[in-house]
Image 1 (cartoon, helix red, strand yellow):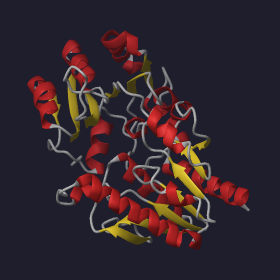
Image 2 (image 1 turned 90 degrees about the vertical axis):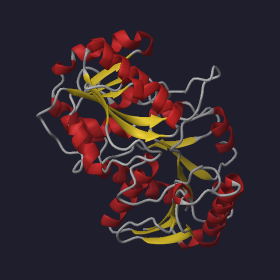
Image 3 (image 1 turned 135 degrees about the vertical axis):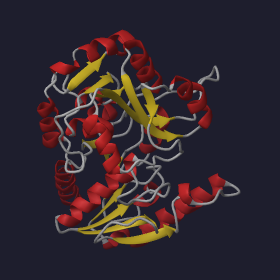
Amino acid sequence: MRILIASLLKRAVNEKVLSSRPKIIFEIVNGLVKKGHQVTLIGTADSQIPGVETIPIIDRSFVEMPTFENPFYAETSFLVKLAKKIEEIGNDYDIVHNHTYPEFINLLVASKLKTPVMTTIHAQATPELDDVLSQFNRTFFISISEAHKKLFRKTKIYKVVYNGIDTDVYSFQEKKDNHLLWLGRLSKAKNPDGTFMDPKGIKWAIKLAEDTGSELLMGGNVEDMNFYNQDVKPHLSDKIKWVGAVSGELTLSRPEVARLMQNAKAFLMTINWYEPFGLVMAEAMSCGTPVIGFDRGSVKELILDGKTGFVVAPEKGLEGLKEALGKINSIKQQDCRDHVVKNFSVETMVNNYEKTYDEIINLRK
């Protein structure tokens, strides 16, 4: 099969980039190549995947480029250039798999192609995104969880395909340390009262650790240093620590992240937003580490409540988290691992996408 992968320009796609969208693109493409497919990636010049031709639209990703005088004009110019290149070469392939950020730019040329265009929606579902995607009826939309799919009221979702993780990198470890682990993003967005939004819920993790006297390791990308300085740094102590650099991009390597997850007593998914998927949950459970998460978005699709962790009703707040933590030793680590290998491995994801390509190509015929 000849497959054109439309990548993002915000970040490169290679083994070192750990942000969720490029990481998933890397795993899909790598898996397809191993299965003998001819894959071409269109995106940034510094995107590197063994056995894959890269068609460059821009020398480096937006996050690696010097600041543009007018970022909106510059970035949208490159995105339109990407879409026009897909229009030019798209019919040379059996299918175009669109992952570009944002998802809808390439759809402006999809109707001009004979080749079917399939779009995986990685972004959080919002009314605005739903409205714009619903304007394009010649693409096949893929959601990454059932919870994600339900939020699209207008857009016709063709299928749900779960993300997958490398279970060899996130390998099983039975012996655990006594710390909790939180990894995520410190958003630069603010609430109407001027306080920082906390979509990934780091404040809940800190409250839980302080209230129970637990050790807590935290890490991630800091979009606004003021968030870190005001809401995280004052709580750091001998028991509550930040790991890795305090940076706008995640600086921890995959092996470093895997070791953190392998050693943790539990992973905290204390989210305040509607999580479309949540790779970190699958990664932690693959290491044999149970997850405690608020019942928002995809959380209850990934966690088997009482078997691979605990799903906490958000209205229970801190008390619900404490109750779950008190029962964490009842979780069998092997159950966590088995659940991910069966449902959320790279192999499962790639197989599901391969089947979906075949279905769509046959439908178009």
